[in-house]
Image 1: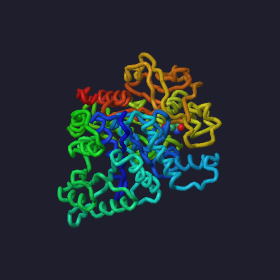
Image 2: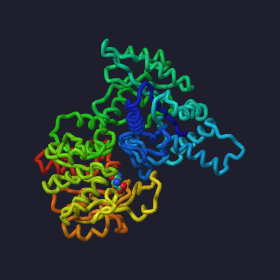
Image 3: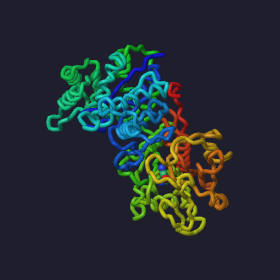
Image 4: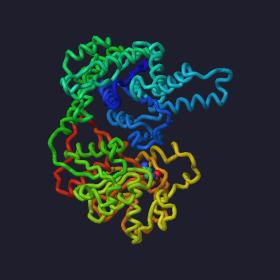
Length: 549
Ligand code: GLN
């Protein structure tokens, strides 16, 4: 068996320069070279996981098969490299300390003083090591969140420093992703902040083997030479990375800069196969091609921050690419609809989508958008809360009352069509206690969902506390709602669809987490396809190159 190789990625100068996408695209590139990869994120914040943070703070919470609530970068990793990760792939300072303090209370260190080095750093090492133990990865990419110089990331950087001597120089590779500052007055790119950032990295004992220099402007060769000289890396290891038009251009860009070959060589590995990126080239050409446009209105609560719905947007994008159409997404603030604003975007849309969410703000706006979709037969896709609100709207319609709701929003509602799951009733803790992760679902013969998936049993990822109240199944069915996806024991409604409608389908799970640029998710695909067909937008099943399948 091959000795596991490690690639560590740190960030410099500023945050949000696309370190996560770089790690993800590099994972894909190394996979194309014939290696099994896994990608891990080390997050320096003290929360145990992002599950309790507001999407405004943190963006989307990405859920894995095993139910781990993780950073949205894990979504990039899975989508780019087409892999399924597990809970060890997202480590936070909170998890590390909780574990060490738990063991201290248990008496595991009796007599000792617990210190950052070695106790915290050893726990971080143990967690990095777990990736290789729990996956079949031969190369582990490990990204440190935040920017070098942050106080809270120091224990992580110290651990990475130690790992070079623990694991051996030939088994470790350090990439520093930085930002080249552009001065508008002189129209030049400046390397000094990058130099300082590398100096700061060196001051904690890490010498980068490669610098990926991100920029919004073309980077001239002499600038790369300057970075190489001042930062003491090979000229061929300074990789200029101009902002791509699409995220999915990044694997090609890294490939064209020979990043894969360079890293493999430095890790003492030979490429196992000529990396075939023709599929990715196709993908990137498709994205940039002029195409008929399909308008989708995403009616949500956190729409000001697009990162809050990143997997939903990507899943729509994947479906559009494979249908040969261009996505025109309107972000509609559901609370605005309640005040009579933003309806133009809903009325102009070829399809309406309500994503997941928590709390009462904007619920009534979502319900009105759903009513509009049902009455006007506009294709509708509901995700988690989007299914619950679709059921609330349906109850209000069939009982001709406004007093139907989820007990999340109105505990005393006359028609609690969505209520707390029995296993949730006695749970007081908020963190990590929802129904999380992969659960099976059986699809009803003849339903839209069954046709979309083309199979009878599926597994999808969940993150919810509330569910459809079974007392309402019968009246709903009598009035034209079909429960087309149920848990195998029949107890939980997983998919509901309105029968007399071209496409009004909603799931209790989050299909967006399993969509890939290479394989669009069936529900998103069918939703966008119906939205196009209902509005005479020419779409087709695009022939996908073999290398992408
Ligand atoms: N708030 C709802 C619940 O807890 C929906 C959750 C979601 O959309 N992820 O069940």
